[in-house]
Image: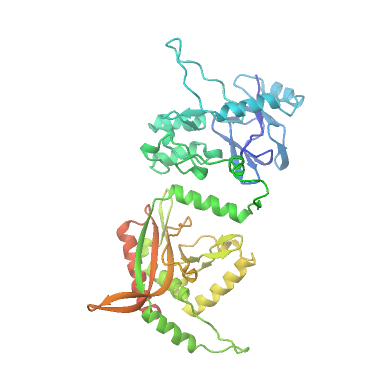
Length: 455
């Protein structure tokens, strides 16, 4: 009997979706776990996997079609041994909309946790057939349900990996084949103690994520304003959640004496020439020195100027430093390319231009994508120290605190000094502890001896 492929509900609030692309065409054979289409929702573009084997007999909704209601029949799959032409011909006359009560019942059933029942006979009970639009769920060792594609479960079983320990990156945190492939190399595996624990939004282990309806129910209607997420905020959430969940990160903090740098900055700014309008040609900030020092430090410790990939380590020739810029609608990190060979005044002017165009949403993709490391400075807000989240595919980011007078001990005497705390976040896959220590030590020496940045 032909199998109906329906428009899936990829989020609890999804009512319609755009069929962005078919990755299979009529007549193509598919296996369980194959990605057959890409669906765009108001939140993201997601892949749809086949949960049965067979041949695509008929595509009923062409790619590019927008606002396709959930549970609409979008294609028909002919099972093994079935007449593909007959299945396709029958689909053309079949109603496009699936029975709503049945679809809702399937969806409701898939969301419930199964309670084990005592079996009257030794034979194990048969599992119910999965709905065409949803991947079956496996049971974790603690009884919690783990949603995974059939192909992912089979690959995990063959590799001897407990499926509940694999971090899912598919729709709703579902485990797909690529997640198992990563798990084989030790990536994306949850700790054994957390296996089977419910996942939070983004795949983090912990308390279950609350739905929109659950959150809204906690607040009185009219006591808040609902501001829809824009695409930038969604991208930030997705990338940094992925970084937090998949990147083993450690942190190194040092205090830097800004005495010499402050004096040099004041002297350089005082000597700056004037332009035709009588304004200084440049006005250096402490952050300009930080960018330059980080760029040179990466050149001095080239093993830390890297990006991790599953196949190889990318060792970068130049120091392309991203600088976090806060915007009303999110955060962006425009990049100073080849910062190690630019003067501090050139870095200062370029940074001012990039920040202005970032706030006006005028940056080109190549001006904020990539980079080899980043700097995030919250010193202007009076923040003493903090840790920053690494922006993939970079392997490090420097969090810079405020410069402040502190009591320090020199030659056995307590004296006042202008100090600045900085914390380096490192991806342990690419930069180990000793290497990270070398990098932040090189940075500290440059900041405390700014003349070394011009020789």
